[in-house]
Amino acid sequence: MSLSSPTKLYTPELLALAVNLANYPYNPALPLIGEARSRTCGSSLELALAIDGERRIETVGLRVTACAVGQASAAIFAKGAVGRTAENIAEALKQLELWLGKAGDLPAWPGLAALVPARHHSGRHGAIVLPWKAAATALCKAGQAG
Image (cartoon, rainbow, N blue to C red; front, top):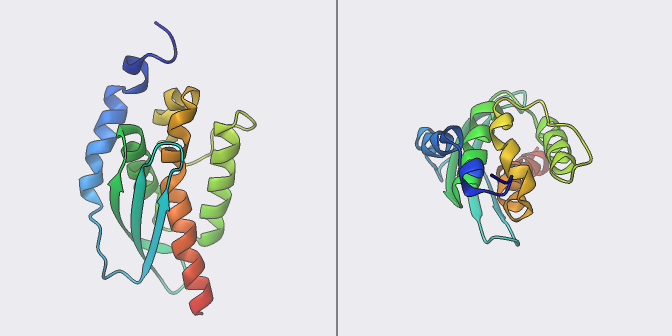
């Protein structure tokens, strides 16, 4: 079976992660909102965040319109985002883009190993980075506010 086989891409682990999005309901009342859309596949993501006094993420809510890979990526992001700063998010996004482009190692973000099969599917890369891009946008707004 080739690396591009759908059965290799949509693993039980990846599909289970997609279901975990229910643990992170979108809440438009949260103070920081970010959005991102993939030009390659049309996936989109809306993200709402709250940060603490040290500007660390304390609450994440998501609304995701994406394939199971994009949904799994969003769940992975949400699970690992609490306690992170804007700088942490920016660095993780940079490392993730390098890894997807085969110019770096898998970033040290909990759970990203579940997305390894998707690395071979460039059409899914845009969906994978959506939560980090939306969070960077939202956290940038926090920086402008204070």
